[in-house]
Length: 447
Ligand code: 4AD
Ligand code: MG
Image (cartoon, rainbow, N blue to C red; front, side):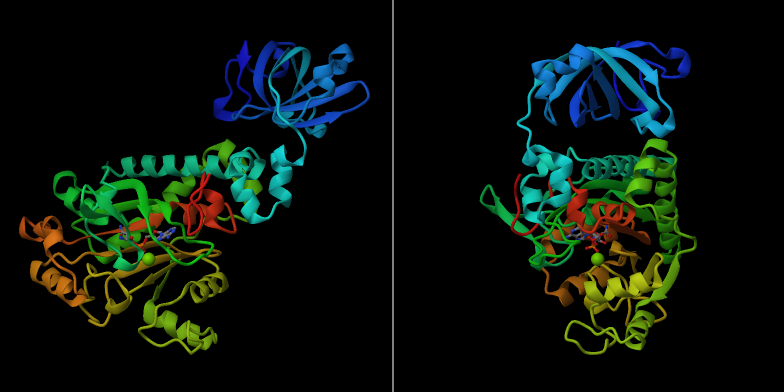
């Protein structure tokens, strides 16, 4: 029988309970670790589903192939399954007692091929150049499996809530979040851009689908190197029809907590998270709510200066460093709301009670800061036309967006969540780069 190595929900053909001791199996994988003793060779095999400790004894451990076995070599092993006591430190408390093996593909061995060691020692740029091998290590592979589970959980949760998933285009001719971060390119002789956000397209899907969402790539020509900015990232975006601003905040809490409980309900993923982020605690509901103006006061009281090293003033953009210090001190999720119109995007409507500010929200998490940006949307035609004008934008390319206000408009709102930032917070990774298969940021477009 060919066996996949993972326990939990991927546990396959064989039940490794004690009554099955002695089951004969055949496993395929790569050498994750190896330990040689005088007449015993311990090989921990990895096949992407899990790990299996294999024990080669007697003549089997003395063959040329066994004596020269290197990490990452791919091989097939057959033998008998034995249960071992928890103290023996065998993955999943089991062991394969080999009676035959074959090498499928050798690996060169040495430090540079040994992925866990590279991960522990290398400088960040080398690690990124060697990302294709680093991915095989414990931390990187766990983070990417958690990533898969999180993306899956978003789909599950949105479908539970009755949302329809759509797939907006990545090649566009409009901007959403300002011209300074647009990647532009020649599209058959016309100027076009890589999308910064699918929001405008999601708004156009509302009239046929009701509440909608998408999980798509967004692109930003970010000219600064920070630990939370990528040029290409995965954007979880949703748009909700006929809602109030308070509905939007309540939904955000629901989706974040709902996704976390789906993820934590998967024992295999929960165990990985326990390794990656032992201090993780489910956020308490309701999340703390804080108006932008109160955040400005808080930053002044705590002597946290703005980007020009001056005390924060109403109207200042709260920069990454200040935002993170505040979030780390408060140390729980925060809904930062009601930003001034001047520092936010053109489509955000004014608050009726305080026209200096907009119905906007950022969700901030300790260790990362902003992971979500959202708002209500202007749904009045004249108000939107005035907004284009104020921003110096031509309304022409946006005719399809504006038309939503002409053909049966509705109060609606939505948000975008950066999947990599969510993961950096959840998996306690220093940078969003470590949550990508192959990160893209200024200066890096390989491997
Ligand atoms: O705050 P942003 O720019 O908002 C929008 O794009 C809205 N149009 C979304 C919407 O309402 N549908 O981006 C939303 C989120 C941020 O909170 C952040 O998590 C992530 O996208 N993000 C980035 N993540 C990695 N690298 C970057 N360069 C990012 N820029 C934004
Ligand atoms: Mg934002």
